[in-house]
Length: 160
Image (cartoon, rainbow, N blue to C red):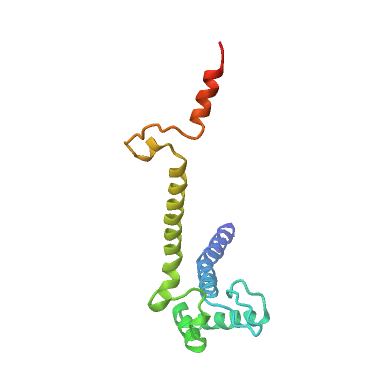
């Protein structure tokens, strides 16, 4: 009797272990789908479906769950949504054509900004350095300035 209970327990645990990845896989597919698509609710909230809490998003999630259960892949569901609503339903732009600029331009802006900041900083630092540090090897001869003569007169007038 004890052996029968042990075998029965092993089958129950094995059944739970075997069914767990299927549930997790279906949940992750639905989450992938929700991350890839925007909500198409009536008030045009502009949120990714995974973040939207309106009643339309709940209906859409249920619809997608049924589609996944029927055997459709995430790519097929996304394609059907794009065919129905256009590319605006995608949460991220595609990586070809004119949409490629949406992926490239932020990096180009960062590089251009970095080069510009470096140029500005080198200009500012260059103005504050002495002439020898700026790479000028020629020394200018000392020319009497506006205050040089007055300073010399003051020094001559001091008695020791």
